[in-house]
Amino acid sequence: MSEFDQLYREVILDHYKNPRGHGILDDADAQAEGANPLCGDEVTISVRFAGDGETIDEIGFEGRGCAISQAATSMLTEMVKGRKASEVAELPKEELLDEIGIPLTPIRLKCAILGLGVLKVALHRAKGTPLPEEWRGLSEGLQFD
Amino acid sequence: MAVEASRALDVHRLRADFAVFDELVNGRPFAYLDSASSTQKPRQVLNAMREFYEHSYANVHRGVYTLAERATAGYESAREKVRAFVNAPSNREVIFTRSATEALNLVAYAWGLDNLGPGDVVVVTELEHHANFVPWQFIAKRTGAEFAHIPIDDLGELQLDALDGIVARGNVKVVANNLVSNTLGTINPVERLAEWAHAQGAIMVVDAAQAAPHRAIDVQALGCDFLAFSSHKLCGPSGVGALWGRRELLEEMQPFNLGGEMIRSVALDRTSWNELPYKFEAGTPAIAEAYGFGVAIDYVSAIGLEAIERHEHELLVQAMDLLAEIPGVHVFGPPADRRTGIVSFELDGVHPHDVAQILDWEGVAVRAGHHCTQPLMTRLGVAATSRASFYLYTLPDDVDRLAAGLLKVKETFGV
Image (cartoon, rainbow over all chains, first blue to last red; front, side):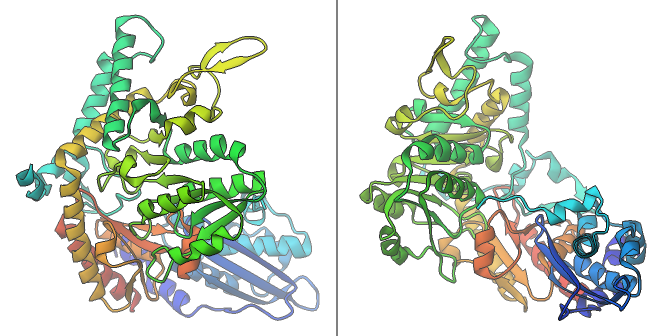
């Protein structure tokens, strides 16, 4: 299989066309949005916790962007459902990249991990979970008005 | 001359000047369709710069020794080439900058901070590149001036009937517009806007970064007050651009950057400014790059801007015809006769990033993104577009391969 075919292998296109966990939840306990200014990918993620206030019970996202960014976010929602916020806050991006399972250039890597970053920001805001330096740019927009 | 003008470009011969076209990209010949972003560099420019560095290099306007005089002569000869290229009245009105962006910032800061205030209106357009948008938005806020824009219609052309409403908002002091839209290729009615601006007592600031490489420019015929463009979009090196400005305005303005070279005399308690254009050229400039800029102007001028324009127009018509035949592809912007060789489009169901990625595998380089025109993207209702753009070295075959590549994109995505 050529690199070309791998990048758009069937599972990626399936998640892109039929995203899992699609839609923003009513009465979300945590929510955040983020964008990749380079290519205009946008993702909003909302989360509802189970009775323990810790476990991700429902997760939904909306977004627009390239196949990689949207498919990766769709895969992410399947990956984190049923996990605790503290655990997801520390989830290494390699785990998501393994799931995506295709070689990515540096520029496409940013597309792939956008959703994960947005989720970490949402959990940080709602639960005060740690937000490592590499994700902070997503939650700080510098602007004048 | 007439014979010269009617001759078609010998594109294959021109391509031999660009080493990159000898290479294969992803196993295929390189179809470079991103010249609106930056152009490839011919060996004439590269060789001349190397020669300059090896045999004529020293700092400019300082030493009295032979080499310094040679360097200064080379640098100043480039200024004269820029002047002639845009038909400016005097080379004292030609300022070398780092880029077109820096040239526009120079005007926004050095003219804007001292001439704008509450009750004044700064007018830009909805299809402006961020380089001629953000500085004005920022300086308007800093000075308390109003920030207004001329909207576009669905074809991406300026709606000039909005001008009356803008006048009602205050004293119009600045009108800023690109001569050619970098995203849509729209050729804007800058002469009419300049006339209108002057009737309001405003200055007209033209971003010609996307126009200068592709069509002849005459600042006196345009009737503008400032015009900015860059070297890297017309086969010259990056890191240098030019600003032309009316002498009386430049004379009145305070400097933008301060330091060496731009002074006449410095004392502990006061400094006076150097004469034009040096008042605006603080520090050691991009000497060899400015020289290379001049060589690039010679290169495109020898080919002829009319011939380049006609060649690009043929490619544009070919591209618009081919893309119109592909279901799901929508081209933004005006018809071919009112735009330059730029085609921005979307493909239903596929993000531009994915389009560009798959085209890259076919050896076709296009740009995907907002093209530094986010207000325009908002107006078009898209986050990004794919953009193909042409230059003197673009082959009809490159355009065919773009169309074939789009079919491959559709096949991959099943749309």
